[in-house]
Image (tube, rainbow, N blue to C red; front, side, top):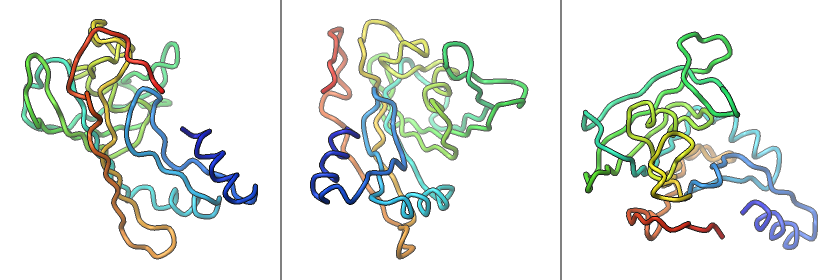
Length: 189
């Protein structure tokens, strides 16, 4: 996606503008990503990032014990660049994830996730630690029957506008087939 947008902005501006990444997602995750058309705007958004609200839909294996809860742990990069919780904060960063059950399905649960912090693979690690890995997320312990597509969708992003200071909100509908599970390889475009 980055390359397509970068080429679009470059072509439209005659090479005078660049695309600056503000918020990204793992390749297997769907939803809202945020870019800025100049470095000054990118830096202003990053400066106000603590006030950003991020929400996700997550289809997980199993059933969380509670209807809603908070998962908090220290995350650090472990073996094979895989994130893991750590008892000792040396080199680790605090991660806080809130969840609530939206719908219980046959052996799976649809959750709404809100992150208080934005650590690498935070949602994936926390849900796996809770015993409910994301459907399709074999890296963090999901059943291998669903191949490839991780069922995590960034459906909401609220930020402080970098120029006028208004709080602006963006939403993205759940992708078609998000709740449909299959054992075929789901190719990315």
